[in-house]
Length: 257
Image (tube, rainbow, N blue to C red; front, side, top):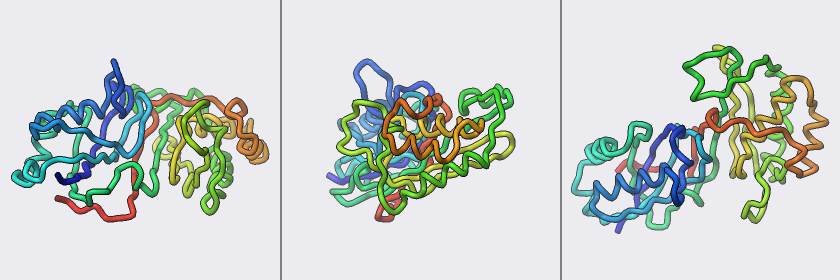
């Protein structure tokens, strides 16, 4: 048996997230089924993380084990082409990598990057891919709040205020190394990178920062929310359809099979 990493992207609109669930449509279930059809072997994948219902991924990694002969006897580009022919149109595979037997798509990841997209002028072509806000926001004010998040790039900070309650994590500490807002062509994008993310974390941060964008929350108030560690003190969670996983970093270089 050989271990492989697979790189893919997906539009999450019609899925209940990445992870296989009983009586729910998931990206992982579709990938497992497609790999089993192609390899004629039961194949279970492990993803680089969970995504909530409706969340998209421009870059996502998963690993799986398969007999060496199953992949090696086929041209890699042809393998990817045939896999994409089986997968639905809203899931696409970009690359296949052979890795060490103990490589792990989730636990080996050093960081993940997410983007959240907003727009304030009604646009039917953005409705499924970004969150419409019927008001203007002060992007500079929201970037001021970002400075408090990136203070944690040296020491992890407890971000319980941005996490769903009653999760099974042992700690809510995260190191955020990048956080900033950018506006281009009427689309406002929030980009954030961290060593780990809590459930609902990015959507809760964006919802809280929008209060700053409306000049109803300053840095002092934002710091108090973080230090209080209470989800009820933070803002609402913005809708899932504006959120994208855009990058995942590993401590090793993935080499195309």
